[in-house]
Structure formats: structure tokens, C-alpha cells
Amino acid sequence: MRYKRGMTDSTSDTQRDRRASLLSIGCFWGFYFMLNTLRWAIEGEPDQLSGITRRTVVSLFGICFTFILYLVLRRFERCSMRVLVTVAFLASLPVSIAYAMLNYAAFYMVQPTDRILQEMAKYSAEHMGPWVAIADSTVTWYFFIAAWAVLYVALVYASRVRQVEQRAARYRTEAQAAQLRALRYQINPHFLFNTLNSLSTLVLRRRTEEAEQMIVNLAAFFRASLTVDATEDVPLSEEIRMQQLYLDIEKVRFPDRLLAQFEIAPEAAAASVPGLILQPLIENAIKYGVGPSTRPVTVAIRAHGEADRLHLTVEDDGGAYGEPATQAHSHGVGLRNVCERLAARFDGIAECRYGALPGGGFRVDLVLPLRQA
Amino acid sequence: MTGRRALRTLIADDEPLAIERLQILCARLPELHLIGTAMDGAAALRLAEALSPDLLLLDIAMPGLDGLGVARALDDAGARSAVIFVTALDNFAVDAFDVAAVDYLLKPVEFGRLERAIARVHTKIEHRIDAGTAPSRPPASRWAQEFWVPYRSEIIRVLAADIELIVAERDYMRLHIGQRSYLLHQTIGALERRLDPAEFVRLHRSTIVRRERVAGIKRDGEGGWLIELKDGRELRVGRTYLQNVRAMVER
Image (cartoon, each protein chain N blue to C red):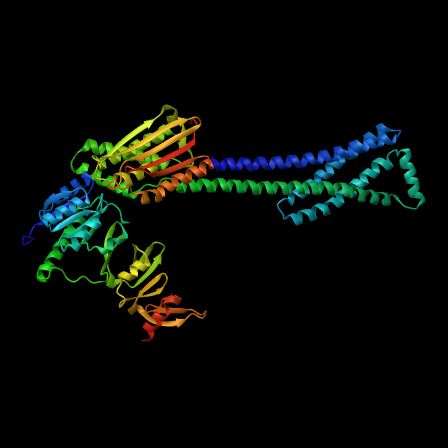
């Protein structure tokens, strides 16, 4: 999908660039046409209509010549700027000569006006043929046509800069996505092997219904964690359902030591959150709260909305003999990943607070923008 | 087999289903006689001290005192119980290597693998009986004799005496033995302290080599020194270690 979208983007970019080039040709000649018509009007030329007709004809030819120049330059579009500028100046020359000749034909040979006749008389008096007039006019027109060619080069340059910028932006987005993917929850092998171990006991004991339930939960949990794209958001209710699966599996491992508690306010359940944002926190609560504790431990997951903020809390009252394993907990990769993900995703608006509780246990509070899924 | 005395066995794990699984497997081995189970390290230690089992099947991750702590405490108390660690993961704590274990098993334990481990326990006990039971414990060497390393889907023992070369790779040490190599989760400094300096020499920030593998020393032409091994390989010598290495070669 993404690839396809990229293709269409670049195609439409190219089309837009071409339209801009063609439009610039039209504008250039339109500008010339208007300016000279205006000049003739101000100077009070007697035969305005004939002037306009001739000027229309030469302008149309001018557009055609410039279009040919455009076709030539387009062939060098991908060359270096130096080559492109050189070609622009060189190719403008024959176009200018051709145009000057046409211009001469239109204004000096076909029913020249009085002023033109005077000019021609002056040339004749100085013993200069029409070629001198054409050469003179070529110099003037060269200036005009080269200006357009340089404008075209500038457009190509702008387009290249834009492409580089787009590539850089795309790269940044992709890098961010890759980073998020890397920060995403990875299946914890310790959890997997311990779960398989429990499962195998259930099978050996022929406790088939429990075994079946565990396999179903495990499959659902793994499928969800493998398919969730950590760069995309999910409704909190979905994230909670997944964490319930996870805790159900862990409860089979720790039947007497793990109690799970969910308090999800309705406005929070519909909110959208980054996929698997709770997973590392709940995993930590098991690892550092339930694991080292010999007594029952409650893992509480709470969520509520407050104005435009969504508050998420994961809390446990476990820890080793009342001494919270704060060090390990706070410095765990999981907690850091969650905070970094929130920071990357919400660009500094999200908050991530955590700490050991005075009575033992650990609490993590996440605050992020409340957005409905 | 008939001559073998039943092994009085204690199981410790903090997950009830994990204990149950080992109970089921143990019940299939007539030479194992289960005498108790514990769900945390402290309970395991109390039971072991009270019952003096022949064998402990110890989980490593347990609340409070972990499996390694239990084994170390028993070792310090002079207990003679054989220890088999049963763990879910291969990246157990670094200090696992300080604890003399008969074997490491990975969860879920395969029955055949448990049988092999039990056979090893018998061998060890018979060895001890042959050697005469008199001295309570052989004087433990200051230097590590063996290391447990993950290899494919098992944790296996490699003898320090077989290691030819050790190269640091980030947080791990790669132990080279012949064509094979094994990764050990340990810092090079900690590992160096565990190795007999009469057998191993540090060459570089990231290399330790068995002394007898060294064939000679030469300059590298850029102001540094290289050690040539008997198999023709060359290893860079760090400046800090040069004096020591040259003294060894030139002796």
C-alpha cells in the first residue's frame, strides 16, 4: 500500500512540474504580448490592429519555439545543474535566431509600418542589410529566451530540492516507525517457556479443559502481540482485552499469588492508545511484583479520562518481602521503552511517571491526549 | 542399577504446575524418592537442612532467596546434596558459574534429559564412594574447573581445561574449544579472575589465550606486537599486557 502511494505521489509531482513549466512559457509570452501592445498604444502607433495581429502570430510561434527549447531541456533534466545551465544558455541561441528571423519577416517584410520603414531606411543608409537587423534583434531576444530557460532551470532546481526534502521527511517518518517497531514489546522467552512448562503439566495431568483454555489464550495473546503494529493506535478496550489474556495465562502459573484488577472508565475504554503500551508495564508488575513475592499480589490497571487527557495507571503491591525492587524496576528496559514510545508518539505532550510505593509495590502513571478511536 | 540406592529428592519451584510436572517425571524414575517440595528459596533451604536430600531440583528464579542462593548456602554449610538447576531461560545470572551443579535443565524438561542428569548424579555419588567417603569435601580449587554455557537448546558443561581461546563479544565471552565456540554471559575481568593464571594469559582488552597455544611473538610492523598461535592464527597484544606476555614467551 505504502509503496503504491509513493508511486502515485512521484507521478503527480512530475505532472505538476511539467504543468508549471508549460504555464511559465505561456506567462512569458503573454507578458511580452501585453507589454508591447501597451507600448504601441502609448507611443500612439497608427495601426494598432495590424500590430496586434502580427504580435499574436509571432507570440504563437514564440510559444512553439520555447516549447521546443523546453523539450530539449527536459532531456537534460536529470543532469547536473552545471550541465543544465550550460545547455540552457547554448540552446537559447538557435531559438533566439529563429525567433529573430520570424520577427523580422513579420514586422519588416510583410507590409512594414511607417516607423519600421523609417528604421529600414536608416539601416539602408548605413549600408547594412537585413542580417544586421536580425543579428541585433537576436541579441535582444536571446536575453528574453535565455531568461525563460533560466527560469525553467530554477523550476527544475526547486523540484529537486522538494524531492530531497520529501525523501528526507519520508526517511524521518520511516525511521520513527522503525524505532517504534524496535521499542515494541518483544515476546519474553521466560514467559513463553514457563507457560509451556505449565501447559505440559496440565497435559500430563490430563486436565484437558484447563490446558485447552490456556492454549487458546496463549494463541490469542501471541497472535495479537505479533500482529499489533506498535506504530498504530488501538482502542484501549482492545489493549485491555489483550492484557486480560496475558494475566489469565500468568494466573495459571501463579494461581495463589496473582490477583488482577481492572478499573476502566467508559470514556477511557473508547480512547485510542498506542498498541501494546501497557504490556511492558504489566509484565514488569509480574516480574518485579509477583515474582519475588511469596504472598498474593494485586496488579491493578486503571484508566480514566479527565478533560482532554487520558490517565493510565499500572500498579502492584508486591515486591520482595516488602522491599520494592525499585532499582531493577525503574531501570528495566520495558518501562523505558514505554516512556520513549510515548515521547516519540506525542512529541512531549505525554507524561510518564513512576516510582516505588511506600508500602511496597510499584506504580506507573501515563498521561496522554484523550482521543476517541 | 539394582545396587543403586534411591536418591532422596527435593524439588523447589515457585510455580505449582512446575513442581507438579517434576513430580510426574520423578515418579517415572524408580530411583528417585521424592521427600519434599518447596515454593520459595528460604523454604527450600530449611527443608534441605532438615532432610539432607541426595538431590535438589532447583528452580533459579524464586521469591526471596533464589535457586543459586540456596545452592551456595548449602555448599557453604558443607551439605553434600547434588544440585540440578531447572530453569526456563538460558541467560541466568552471571554468578551461576560459582555454584557447582551436576546439571542444568531447561523447562519444560524432557524426560530423557532428566534421566541423563540423574545418571550423572549416580556417577558423581559412586565416584565419591569409590574415592572413600572420609574427607567431607575435596578442597575446592580457587580456579574454575568448568563453565555451563547455552548450546543449541541445552545448557552444557565445558571444562576450563579444554578452552583454548576466549574473545570478548559485547556482554559475552566466546569460549573457543577446537572448531566450536560457546557464549558465556560474563565480563572478561570477572572471567580472568576465575581462570588459573598458570594456564591462561590475558593478551588484550578482549582476549585471553591458553598459554600452551602460544607459539611465538612478533612485531606487526606498526609499532605493535602480535602473538602467533600454534594453529597459525595471530592475535594482537594490548600494550598493558605486553610486558607480561613477552616475559611468558621469552622465558
